[in-house]
Amino acid sequence: MGPRAHVLCPIDFSTPSRAALRYACALAEHFGARLTIVTINDPLLTEVAGLRMGSSWMVEDTERELRRFVAETFEQTSSFQAEIGYEVAEGKPAPQILRIARERACDLLVMGTHGMTGVRKMFFGSTTERVLRETSVPVLLTPPTDTGPLTLDHVKRALRRVLVPVDMVPETRRQLQVAQAVAEGLEAQLLLLHVIEPVHFPLPAYISLPSVDAERRVRAEQLLEALVSMLSPTVRPEALIAYGNPAEEIAKTARDRKAGLIVVGLHSSPLAGPRMGSVTYRVLCLASTLVLALPPAAAQPADKATAAKSDEILRR
Image (cartoon, rainbow, N blue to C red):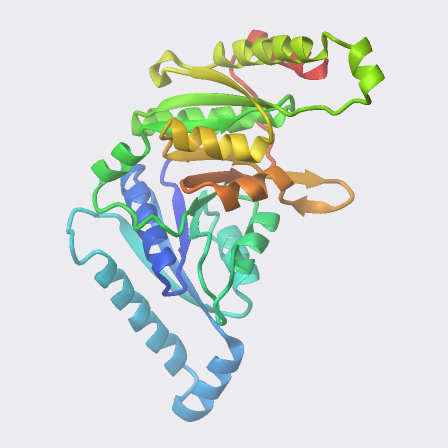
């Protein structure tokens, strides 16, 4: 996030959104950002309330409830000093969240993965899913079991390690740039993980290609070596290789290595448009930690020599 960044935190008055609010406020204060807290009113409820109580009653009452929700969230601590603004919108939650993020030029969205909007949602909130499919800014997702930090020190202790799954695609450098900035800002270690997914050959083909697995391992090691060389030593980068299902190995590594944050990429397709990759979706469902999801974006690395080296490996 750049100078005087802007954080947006949608609230639906659920317990998961309370945790998201705590993280949003902590990060806004730590990075000197503005924080806008928004909630979305249902149009039908607004219309009924307007007929009975007046056209402005619903917005005013919702903002009062929103301020009360924020005050209750931070009643156990007075350490957060972020600049907070409030907004009440009307309409479908996901489109309104995306609109506000775009119009306010927000740098980060913070929201829970299991929030509720209207009817209680099961598994993965539909609002969160649509936001992830169409967002143009990074989204920090808080797990349902996380109650959120009470102080900035709690955030640093929780985010002792940042895990970045890396693959042989150009978008990997973008993930690393963002992850390194977060790790430096929070004094965390940066872990790079490449998962080698099993390739199933017919038996005769596998017998005739005995060195395939070894060659994939060598390429993975070369990729990680090139990427690590691009990183600052202050984040104490460590490269890891795992075998198996990518989403399961990412979640397992985050758990085993006590990573407090996973940085993953969202993907786009010229034909299908914005979408969330199946690995990213499963990571969000399996992981019990914070996940920072990054939309596609062009990013130029500072070191052209190491970038060229990694590009050569990525093209193989």
